[in-house]
Length: 392
Image (cartoon, rainbow, N blue to C red; front, side, top):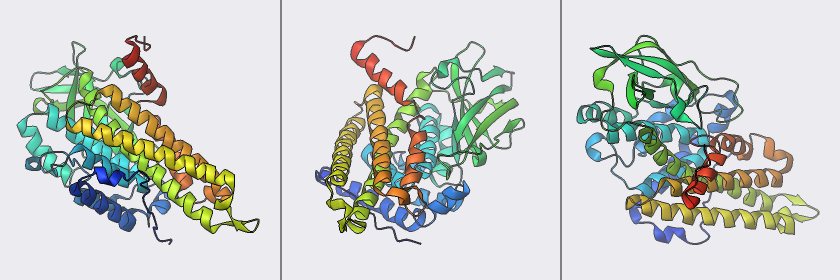
């Protein structure tokens, strides 16, 4: 087992923009990843299995709802701390970060923001401690980029709701204890419902044969006349804006997380370029390899500054959905390009599990699609700057 020698690049001294608390939070996550994730993640990715034993550790480093108030079990941290935790976890693996992102932004966030006090006290502390794992049901077999077309629905049966429909591509689904599910009522209005494992008619078949996010559990949510208690409806926000607000939080975390994957690929390639000898000298001494490395660190630095500024705006309550889309789109594309360049630098070794690069590259092929595809985020920016809707 190779030691994790990762050293984070900081070409523009971005650390000077962080508080001491930010750095303590980040460093704790970084050390945990080195100790608990790096030694095992290649084996679990090869087996296409999520390492469930790390859930407790994710909770301990504050990865579940870090910005949720302390009174509900969260760490009460700011948005930059949340981003830094996601960065460090995705440096380990995008699939592990997906588990934390879903738990934080797609399950805890809507319960905190759209739920009532009873729901917050019932679910949030257990989710923060990792006693419950959650998932988020929005995407359907026929409705991905157009979630407004969803057909999952619920009917008022007097003393309960009757939920029917299906969701797919759901991270954490196979072992989730609770699901925040978005469905239409009889008037066609979208609401969030908390569905618990064990409810009759609720099943979560696992999705197999993935070439990406192999260390993350993905599945479907099937609702066949599921009786959902009325107190499980999230009462404080309805309409498509409710799930999209959750996605804003998740996309923000992804913008930070992708930097972690890029950093790991860059650090691996940089170290390899100094050790691999060809034509009598380290390959890092050749111009084409230096070009690759110089472009990598340039793009990472730009992404660091983009997300730091976005974090400040999030802390101030000023960040727009379009700004978040820009950061998600830019940073994931940046990370995927770096993964491809780093893989080339390692030659044949780059495709093996001895190095993390090919795993990152495969994972990022999912990250560039989920939480809004690469093209959809481009159109969100286009709509924002022109005022003209290209979606219809």
